Image 1 (cartoon, rainbow, N blue to C red):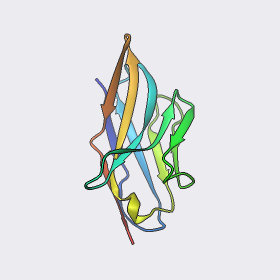
Image 2: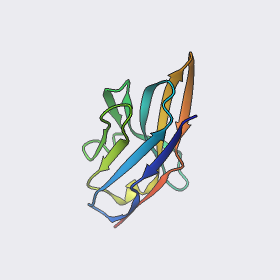
Image 3: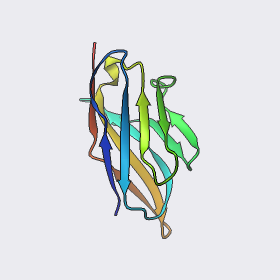
Image 4: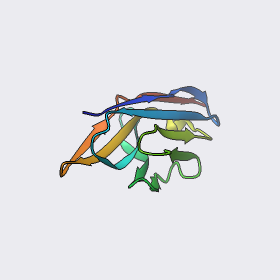
Length: 119
């Protein structure tokens, strides 16, 4: 079993920065994708950024140029550096992990960390 724990959320003024961290316990299987999603009140959960196959990255258009996802290797936390934050970035941010183990795919979610950006 894998558990994901996020940290780093909080309240920040528009234009400020935050860095989110996601630590995974458990090392089963090989990671296919790892990333961050967010869900604002009354909205669907949406992809923010992810790392695919350990190397390529994908970002939502709304965060390109402002957010950076990073990870040194599969055993290290996943970070989301968020700069130039806007009020519309306010949401609960979730860490997501997709991995393959013994021929099956597994998906894991953290409990989320709240990010609030004031105007």
